[in-house]
Image 1 (cartoon, rainbow, N blue to C red):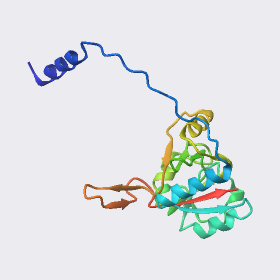
Image 2: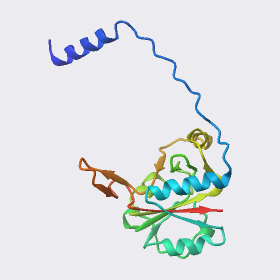
Image 3: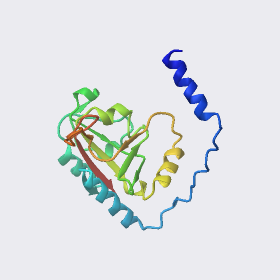
Image 4: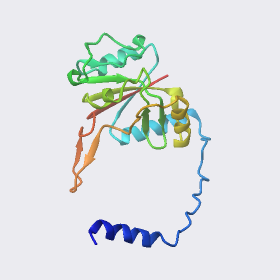
Length: 195
């Protein structure tokens, strides 16, 4: 008997009594009862806790806010609203970009997570992962409190490709709990809440 046969035999033996899978309780909250201001404040609190910088702007103020945040050549998704943008040095290759400006589909305040689904104003996934600085525009009406609410909005866009969930700048910790930023994506995240 080889190792593979032994392992498969053990698995068959362990599953021989055909245990019944218990019903998973799904009585968690699916709808928020909090007001828009409270939900927005919760999102800002979580993002700041995750070391993102958070800014607010009206549609008229947005180009000036973005102009102050841009750190060099910018890569942009094809569907971004050009009225939002200041004059920038635009590049098409994410490898040549110092930063990227995207919009977002929905943000979950409870977890401090911004979700990108590859919509035209968000671009393909690599745009938000390769440049060292991500400037993400979060329309205020896309902020929800609970993850089930966020997931409903993700499902509503007819998801066909990968999604990106962002909770602060990219970071990881090694065995000694030394935090290192920028390992799996941008080291700097600026979130601009629009509206």
